[in-house]
Length: 435
Image (cartoon, rainbow, N blue to C red; front, side, top):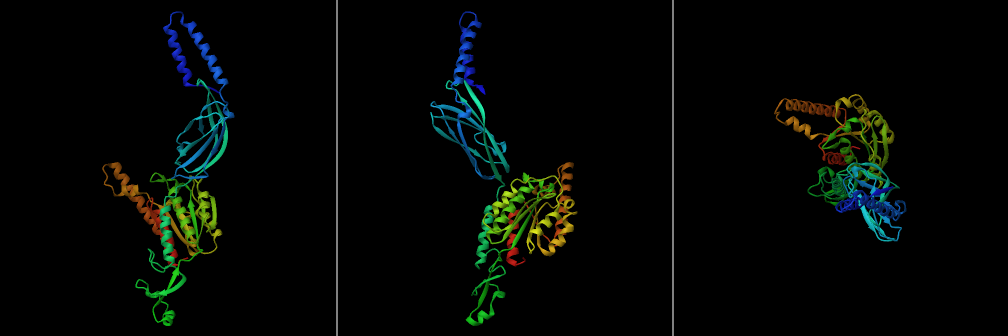
């Protein structure tokens, strides 16, 4: 498709000004000038390299997290024996925040250039990148040819793993615990016997092995390591309650960060982690596993999930989970503490599940609600908002108490604290041997 370039308009405007300065009928001069410009534009167009003849290859990174930058690479090849000026615009969604949006390049005769497009995605998901638009300029710069090229590819944008450093910290801490050194959980935690060693001033009296002490004539204590091959099932609610925003992002995003932290932590410590994502029906299932690729499998199953504006079926999620693990497991349910949503399905099903498994209900609380409840109202609207906030917090505390009364552990934390608090709860379960 021919496209006039700005240079053609500039030349036409300059020629019209010159015609106006010379004596004689202006229309005759304009006819001559326009005729010359048309001939020059036709010649320029005829000598322009067709967009379809330009060699273009695109490299797309397999995965880019939303909290890290990525890069797309365009390799452009000039098929002609003349220098080629061109522009390439890739089909990139605005949320990918590409820089630059359009690549301008000058390719030497029969040469190649490489252009790089930096992206920093602001939204997770699967992005199909099908086409690029190529515009090649003529040698005179008066006209250009523009065409569309198909270069199909897929870019996967994963949710951010904001708690990665916290996970590494707790992995190191748990490993210190396993070899009997003092850690945040205490010396010799766990229930699997590891070894015998001489008593130290910080050892618990109940850890003394009296038979070994009698044989060696000095105090000997037993050390223990955390049990391995335990099972964590992470139940991720993707219903309407998880669509509400906290700290500028949906609750589902905070839950995903915690899911990734628990998966990384548990698999690195020898346990098995699995995922069941659900709303009104089960959306994704990752069977429990402890291989090095389990975190990637869990993240792959989650990255396209979006909260659906439907009521969640907790009983169905529990049935799916128990079918995945017959043995006693730690079930971590990520949802919102809203009595209206949980009363009909979660509360009736919880006692039977808590009888055979350890259940943790995890939720992220909104710090703005607490701030509104504590604020001194300046007007009537502020008073109504404060009263609503107080009522919401009271309902939240009441529901948490009911869940605890039915045998569940409740972890209700502010943004940024949910994942570390759940990791600590998991490590405490391992250290006390509750599984």
